Length: 237
Image (cartoon, rainbow, N blue to C red; front, side, top):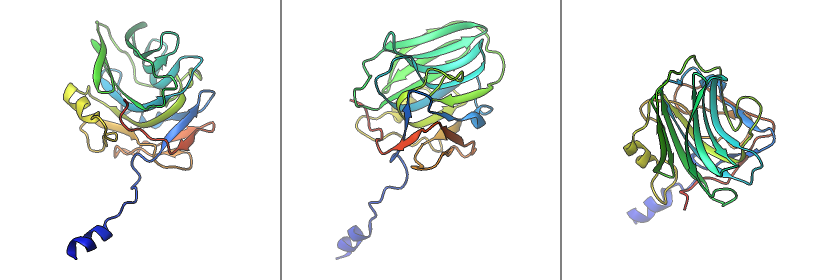
């Protein structure tokens, strides 16, 4: 009888984690997270995000933060080569780490972790390090803007769904990436991870405010009919 009462008392109601994503139309919808721009640095950092890609006609920005045309970090899908990329522009020179994928309209959410320093960039896709690039250079300035779903110049709008985007002020290591991506499980809740400075779960389900769950409370704003979807990420593949 005790076990029966316990079973009856357990709640099966979802608590607000991984029950929504944001659907972006590839035309002009995006999420403004400019309030987080001062918590991240072009000197070193990491971006973690889940996304589902629809058919696209142009390159699709997942996240970008920009100082100016000579210094920025851009995580995006390059449709001409069907590659996921991190583009790290330092002092007017663009460094790329790229990996060819077949994700357009595959019906799956995928995970990307991109990391950067002035000597190395890395690109993890679905838990595996797929590309890196080493170099020398100098990143100059502080970020002037930070957007999800467009390239900060009103272009390369993302077509598909975005969920669970986190930004870190340090480079994540292999063991941390492996912990974030575990086969056949829901996305790892980044809350409480060391060096997390912005975390947009995008689980609000209504309205235009994208809450920052990092504890810093630099909330974002959904723009141009970006809408919530109940299509949520589970592990790809």
